[in-house]
Image 1 (tube, rainbow, N blue to C red):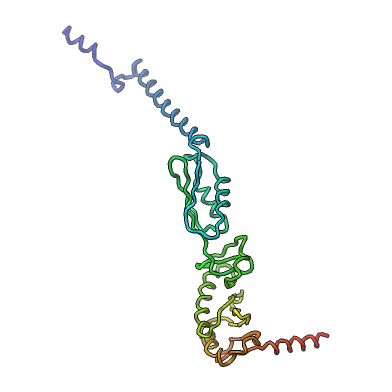
Image 2 (image 1 turned 30 degrees about the horizontal axis):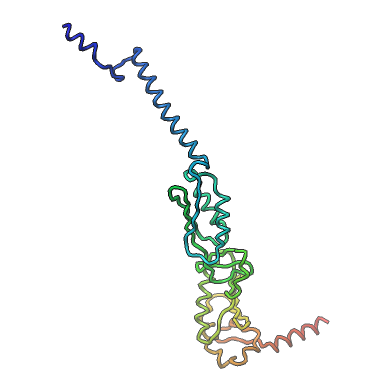
Length: 266
């Protein structure tokens, strides 16, 4: 019996067996202190990580194929958007700032340990001018860079909002139809009434009208060499809004009409 009591006195008390006495409260207090210490350490680590001085961003690299993007401008955008250190910087904010610049179609920003940000960009690729101040992509997305006026060699398209894709596709189709006559489209516009207007590289304006115009354009291209040919410089406009043919407005006729109009108004 004496030996058994000595064993019981030397037994280790577990917190799970402590009950509601003093030892139980000691265990509760110990667990609370440990949990509080862990929370404090996590909070301290979070606060430190938010300090830009902790692991600062020291390098920014820009990747991707681009011709028109100003790399110095992009670095400036990134610098203005940096709002934390390597761990805390808001990558989404930088991406949105980059994509707000005119030439950037998309931007992806990632961290590279220990102090580098990598930026992968995709640049808009213009296939035509959009009106007087913009450019448009092959998928019909208009954008407005400051240097749009430098792209005078591109054809012009313009129309209502959302018509960019249709206009770019239609321009390609018209180019193929006119190619048999050696003609090149310079501009294509669709107005609010869905009427189509075409300008050729040689300055001639072509009225296409509304609805299906492929047959009329193809007929015009086939007839061009014999109907106009070497007299192209004398043509002011062509009207394709006829069922079985087209009409030509010659420059001398246009000048005469303007002269007659002036006499009537005098």
